[in-house]
Length: 122
Image (tube, helix red, strand yellow):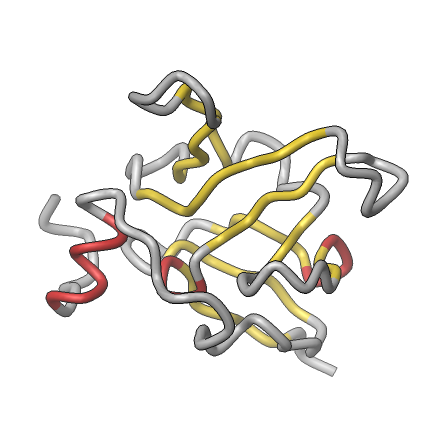
């Protein structure tokens, strides 16, 4: 784990202990620049900005991930599906299907604090 970035206590609460940040406060909720969203803990690319959409749920939403970057795990409660970084297993949020927000019919609901944004170079 020595190659991972040092996390603040709040980042640890969410990424390592599967917490959730409060809705509508995350820095990427209304973010719309072009680039990629990377895992805050290990810097692996997770999402392209072209897959981000506004769902009014309070957290950044994506209808697709970079191939192989995100793993789905059944939550301990058995009702929701958690999403984690494939590389470091850091908690990202949850995935929901069947809501009809996009043609892909998938919403990755991601904690802003679990990611860092890397802007595309012009």
